[in-house]
Image (cartoon, rainbow, N blue to C red):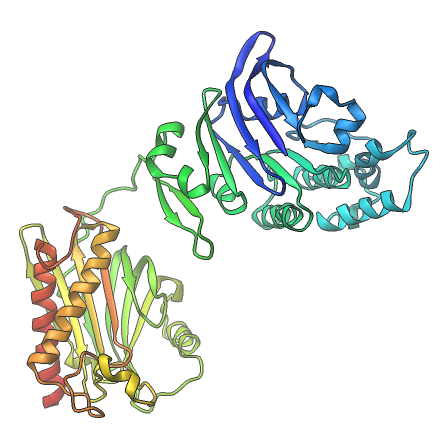
Length: 485
């Protein structure tokens, strides 16, 4: 569709863009990234012909763009520059209709049903139909931006060049606009080249990314190949952390500030736990970084309140999570700041212990009822309802855990729990074989993220060793407490 070969150019004789080469296929969406002054907008202007190239070529469908007349080029290429504040005299419909000018044989002398349909559809796609007769100078910057995107879409060119199309838009309209553009790529084979400041948006919507630095291409490829922590940090000179998008196989970044919040000396131990006949409760002054399989707020996050709530053995609700949220709100807990678990045994049978180590300390809390124990290797043989899980394990670590350490800590804790059940000869009542847990056990690993950095939590590392020992000991004692009560 578009071939850029050894392209250089800029303003006057100064080459801001230097020896840039890439291709964009039909129906592809390419995002251009880079810090301020890296040449993103200049590159777009040279490709569109707004600025002359000092060296190199831009070919569209195999032909040099200079071989096209102005009108013919506009039929093939629509351009949305950055929106600048200035006076507008047209209303919305008139502005969008300008996108049909390349298709006219005279100045609107041959307005057709096809033109009308293109304008109406473009306004509908960008959500501006209600402003049809409104003057542009009465619209907000975000609304004006959507009008000019509609104008570009009404042009119905197979190649669309966009310079920061989501500028001035709130997150809802950013999503709506980029969804619309992406849909045009998929359904109409439109090719899009767009400059982005927002790396995360570019990653989500673009097939490939071109990362610029000082007028040259630093990296070019699929989002996962371009958005790497070190690469982004090197180009933008900013600390970032990358993580996967929750729904798409696309990387996302999180900014990592160099200025931290006011330091606190957060140290958690068993004296911070509150135990009643209703729950086991831990509340901390500062949020803990958490990974869990809880009923409420499972997964990873930062939370201050942790509750293991006692429910009757006959407890049965269609939507357990919703009911648990209601319980938290009714009892004065902030649901968005709380990790919530359930247990069918008396919370006063919890076993809590502190373990001192060379790197700091950890606290482990276990509630364990095993009347509904299950052998996971035999569960496929049984057709039975899963009763409430009754082994809930909390591991609170005073230290800084890596992402790998969180996962390893959960593995180590599960292995230690299973060994405790083995040594206590806990049997699956359906199969008569040794149990490995209960049907819906819950596990929590939480860290203060203060103190010593702990990269690993496997059984051969110091943290893993103490987790293995602590979970094993607390699980054994918790089983014995419940059995004797």
